[in-house]
Length: 584
Image: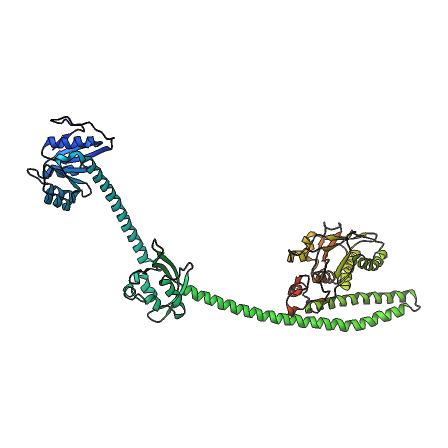
């Protein structure tokens, strides 16, 4: 073997200097028995811009050793005394098939050149045309780089396909590709299809319509549209397949319509999952929910019937109790108008007071039973607020005077009229004032303030934000015993009396519950405020100022659903029933 550095001395005519920019280093294995010819090849490579590192060999053994170097390119004479280019090509194909092989010879026939190219040569050149050697090497090296990249891409694709096939063949779900072009049919389907349908993959390949034929008749049209490329399924399809043994399988199929660059559908790819167990569970759960719903509906109907009968009994009892009570109160008044001694008058007065108290309790029970039975109504009229307030405060004044209390009434100047049920309005306000009198000590202060309020705080405005409404705000403030903050939420419950002081106040616990029901029946709100025991309390009522346009009566009937007035207010009577449950 002969070696040479990157510089060579040429015999004969001086060789022209390099006219190209340096391309870079290149390792060249030269199969040549003449050293001068090898140096000439190196010179032409240098002229082409290369910095060659080269070795010259002229025997088979040296050539094999040279391939282990390894070279970037092989330049080989066609015919050597003991070795030929054809033999070298065969060795190169076995040891280093990716290394470019360029035949460089003095003279070679066309047939020999073609034979070399068929045997794997990259190119061939005549020695008297070495001027294009640099270009030939450049092309060969470029082709080699492209071939390496192509082979790497092919290898990567093969490995990717192998990974996909391993995953597909071991997945429990069925993975398939259905061809739409040329002859329609299944291109690939994973082995899991046999466990799901008892049809082997080969049967699916042989019958292109098997996928549609095994679908349930009700699901067949949709699946057929997808498999014909007529519909792109963006959501999973629920398709029932019939197994070979006749059993039905619920499947969830996620399908993708594959299109070519022109947008033409070419295939459908999909994943099919057996969801029979999930479907059975869902059906059982749905049946259980229906069963429980029916049971609850039946229980609710029975409870409503019991509640209705209870309300009827309460109404009848209240009516029957009022008759003897009216007699007791009436005869007590007659006795008080006749002469009697002090002890007799005290006894009769106590009878009269007890009768009045019991009559009020019966009236409250009757009102509550009417509300719960859906038989209470409000007759709406438009009146001046000041007149209504005067009527109520004139009556309340007798209570405050009896306890040496001060009642102050403040009505804002912009308060004019309100559309309301006069009787129920008076009942609401009188209940609150009476409550304030009862829980305020003698010589205490009770204040009633009335003003217009921004509609955003009113129930009407909350339920109908597009309707601008004005509300009337009434505040009843007392200097009485006060309320603990944790008890404020219990005030309006039926039969609830707060034991938050050392004093025990008489009462049935119905007044505030009834007041709240009447306020809500008008479409308003009521709540209580207090800073704690001994610091008094304030009860706030908001009522919508405007009533129905036609002035018709508004009634509450559970059988008719929500209470709806012409001003847009809606109240669910069952909500009232829940808040006014009375246990006998």
